[in-house]
Structure formats: structure tokens, C-alpha cells
Length: 410
Image (cartoon, rainbow, N blue to C red; front, top):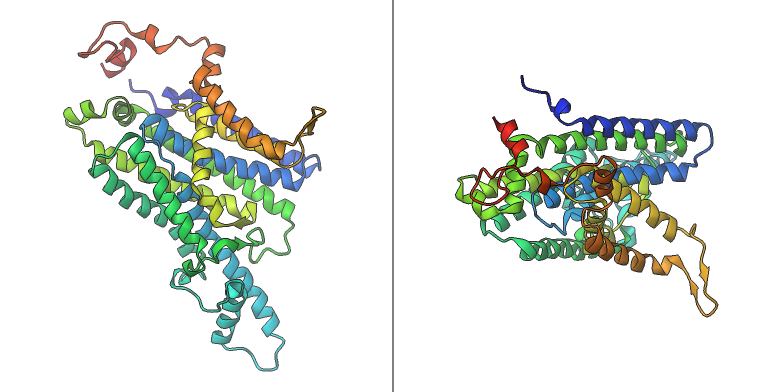
């Protein structure tokens, strides 16, 4: 008798239960005044970062593609929703100001005034073509998913069909991210250059709703997105599809020799994770309140890879642990909460030394704990290493199949 997906993956149920309890606890403490609105926003943003980290873990930890460009997809989702937020908020302000005139303004006058408000900072008042659908929330939400997906589809098709792999593919993804960030820094990009989009925390039509309530709404939305994304990716990496994806990671040439469309699997994983990263950006930046080209710079994607490595790649919960642990620790160190250490001749200011500490942590994890923080669960649950499960070799190489896999397949 075949078991259901959740029955074969009890860790998914445990994760969803813990996520629900965490979200409910934060909500109750916020309503009781025990948690500040800023902390609720920080936790909501952390859940979004956990979602993009899970996407990164699937493409790197399971499929073996070290992408140094997934935060670019994250940023594109943020820019898409940010355009609507800025347009709708500015439109409401302009309409209210012009309504006091004795002669009602024409639609063109309203449009010109909106353009002047948004693009005056870069010396323009005309709407670029990229803002053609900024007035429509449904269209901008579609763009937030389609634009990252199409970019990943085109880039992945060109790279994978050329069979670019390993460090060369990582360099290409980083080059793509760098090119995008440099383009966004230009005023001619139509996205306000290095000024970026600001005031995104002000949700149009909900100006009367306090930020404490809006932050809780986004916290729940982020938790629901993380839960849904976790289920989706757990399904992707399980069963026969998951076996093929991991086989591509371990030995791509052999999988291709066996007749599997390797490029198709890689393109599917790369594109799907890019779409989910765009969704995470949609939820993140209204909580952050601002987005600028620095958010999609290559260093952001490197941080993402560090989170996954510290948490434990090849484990979905490890990506969540790594992203939550490092991002919250970063907020504590760089936000001024960590007390400086006076050494007498020198005072360590953690805002200056945090990146050094993060880099040393990454090196230490890579050398001494390659399974990351998630590997601690193996010790807690006394799980045997994979090598001890090898009983009989079903393939040409030692450990090609394990007894448990052979039994499941039978």
C-alpha cells in the first residue's frame, strides 16, 4: 500500500507545526505589547529570507547548481511590487492635493503630477515604459513572478544547453547579477537609479490601519508563503524526481548517459526556484520599506549561499535554520544591540567586524562541520551515516544503491 506524501515525510509536518506555533506566539506577544512592531517586521522579513534560502538549497544542495544570482530574482520581485506601492500611494496623495482646486484636474494632469513626484529625484517627470502596468496590482504581481521566471528560463536555457557547469556556471550567474545591479543604478533604467523605491511600508488604501496590525498581516502572509514553499520543494526533492535531481548533483554525466533529459530537470529547478525567490521579494520589501540596486548586488547572493552552507545544504530545514540564525544575528550585531568589547588598545565595534565574523564562521563550518547546523539533528536523533546503510551494491560503483532505496523501489 502506497503511503501519502506527508506520511513519508513527517519532517514536513513537524516543520509546519513549529512554524504555526512560532507565528501564533509572536502574534499573541505582539498584541500583549511584549514584542515591538519593529521586531515583528524583522521576524516577518526573516521568514521571507528563509523562503529564498530554501529555494537556494534546492538549486544548490539538491541539484548541485551553485547559483550566485538568486537574490537578483528576489530583488526583481521586490521592484515589481514596489512600483505599484509607490504609484498607488503617490496617486492618492496627488489626487487629494488636486481635489482642492476649483477646476477638477484632468487625468493627464494627475498623471503628470504623479510622474513629477516619483521621478523628480532623477530630474524627470515622464513615466518610463517599464511602469506601463504600475497602476494595476494584479499585473504587477504577475510581473513579480513572471519576470524572474522568464529571466531564469532564458539564462538557464542558454547556460544549460551549452553544458556550462561548476564554477563557470557560478561565475555566469554572478555576472548576470552584477549586470542587473549596474543597470538598476543608472537613472535611465526607469527605477530611480540608486535612490531606489521608498515608502513601501505605506500600503495604499490602508493609511488608517496602524503599522502594528499591518506588520502582523505580513508576518502571517510570510509564514503561509514559507509553509507552502516548503511543502512544494519537499515534494520536488522527494520521489523519483528528487532521485534524479540528486543524481544530477552527484554525477551529471552518468544521468545523461542513462537517457534522462538533464538540461530539462536543471532548467525546471532553476526556473521554479527563481519564481519562488520573486514571491519572497514581494513579501519582504513592503516590510523593509525600501529597495535599491544594492539589494540585488552579487554580495547579497553570496550571503544567501553562506546562510545555506551554515544551516546545512541538502536539508530544507537546514536552509531555514541557517537563514534565520544568520539574519537575526546580523540584525543584532549591525543594529547596535551587541555591546562593544573594549580591549584597552582597541574597541571592537561589531558593526565593523560582523562581516569578518560571518566569513570566519563560514570557513569554520566548511572545514569542521560540512553538514552545517542541520547536521546536529543527526546527532540528536542518532541517525546513522549514509555509509553505514550501504548493504550490497546494486550498481557498478560501490554504494550506487542502498538497501533502503532498493526496498522502496521494489
